[in-house]
Every structure is written in C-alpha cells, then in structure tokens.
View: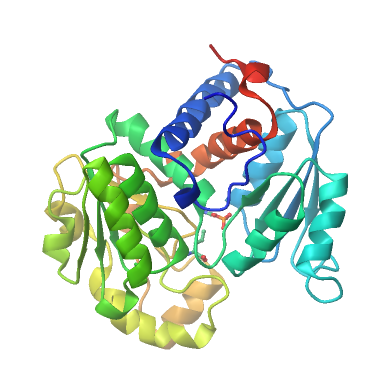
Length: 338
Ligand code: CP
Ligand code: NVA
C-alpha cells in the first residue's frame, strides 16, 4: 500500500480508493485472526488517542477503546458535554490542543463540517466515528462481514430499506459503489439521499461496474439482494417529534420474514445497531404506548433468525476500527502481517 494511508484522516469513504478500502477490510481480517489467536499486536505502544463523543455510543466507543488498548495505546474519552469544545472553545482551537497532545482523534457528533474542521486544524489523523452525514468505520466492519459470509463483494446486491438518507444509508451507497456492489435504496421518495450524493455515487459505480437504484417498491428493491440492511427510523440528534411521521412513512419498509422471502435465497439481514426489534428499551416502550407498535424497522423474528448477522457485524467494529487506526498512524512496514 506504500504507506498511502499513514497520516490520513478517515472522514468519509469518498476520500478513499477502492484499493485503499479493500486494504482496510483485509487488514481488519488479519487483525481479527490475531485477536482470536491471542497473538499480541501492540504495534502502537506509547501512543495516545482522544475519543470525542458528542452523541452516545456502545459499539463505536468500546471498539475504539479496546482496539486502542490492544494496540498498546492510551485513550482519553471526552463524552457529551464533558469538554470545553463547542460551548467555551471553538472546534479549531480544540483541534490544535488535542493535536498537540494526542496521536489521533476520534469524533462522533453532528455535522460533517465539525469533523472536517478538527481534521483541518489538528496535525494528527482524525477518524469519523459517526456524523449526521456519514458513518465510515461502520462500513469497513460491514464489508468485512459480507466478505466473510459470501467471499466476494463485487457483483452482489445490497438493499437498504427505510430511512435511505441517513448516515448509514449514505455510507452504504458510497461503499457499495466503490467496491462494485449494486446498491438499492428502498424507501419513500422524501427519505432518499441527496441528489448530489446519488450523482457522485452513480459516477463511481459506472467505473466499478455496479449500479445505484432507488425505489419505493419493496419487491423490486429486495429482489435479488444478497444483503437486506436497515437502520433505526429516527437517528440520534433528530427531534423526538418526528417519530410519528417516520412511523407512518417507513412502516411499509419494515424488514419481516415476507420481505426476506423476496430476497436471494441465501440473503442475510444486517443492521448497524442499536435496533428497535422489541419493546425491551425505554424508547421502544414509549413508542409502543403512543403508537401501538412493538417492532419497528425489523421484526424480532428476522432479527433473531439464522439469516441475521448483526452480532457478527457488531464484533467486526472492533477489528475494523483497529485497522483504521493502525493504518493511519504508522507506516505499514511496522505492522507487516505477512
Ligand atoms: N453501530 C454503532 O455505531 O453503534 P453505537 O451507536 O453503539 O456506537
Ligand atoms: N442512523 C443511526 C446510526 C446509529 C449507529 C444514528 O445516527 O442514530
């Protein structure tokens, strides 16, 4: 890879070539083997990373922390409202301070412009742990999962059902186009991605021999799909009041066993998680009380089925975030995994 990734920020997958993305997926797979075989991989001993979370997290935070510790690094967690950033200190000033103390900075929060400003002002790699627009580390884990299940990625179809303009859906459209997978956004017209992003992805897809389709028809959307993917209907940072409208708009795009039956015979179900597939959470209980539904974007039956790869996918967040940090922090001859 000629150290092409060392020193790079990881803000969105549009900034990376297909080869670079494939390299990160393969590096994740190698690091996963090390972890499973308990082979020490403390390549980054003595380094430290800052983890800024302006939104809550289970997987991303734990993956960054465990990955950093496995690599020998120290971590400092700055949770929602726990630093001066934003209220008393600008993002640019915070970036220069953190950049002087840490070897890398992770940011989860709101606009993509914030993570971009951090990257512009900090002299160390900045990693996007989820913004309103994109969730790129999730994509490396997801594509590793698809690769582990099917072997090859190129030529397969992935259909995203539901809120097709959220951060995860946007990122899936980009990564599929980059890796030669056919992407289908299946949902209501006013929850489709921005036109400009669709056009960008279509031109990437033309180069990689894949397609981007948009449809509001479930059967058409899911037909032939190897991967049927969904996400929650209201993302972090959106007002609670939008639930009512989203339930109306997106209920026809719930993934249930009928929908899985329309996909390829060996299709898998994926979800970045967390998921509202039952009423075991306070939010789902409130939605149940107000709207009478007990399952949202996916039924419990599909979520718990053999076809569901969601926990496999969740574990892969660890290995892929580790790969992203390793590849961007040091030259690849320092971690030659053969
Ligand atoms: N998928 C994902 O990013 O999960 P968390 O919100 O728990 O980090
Ligand atoms: N679209 C979801 C993804 C969570 C990992 C959100 O932004 O809340």
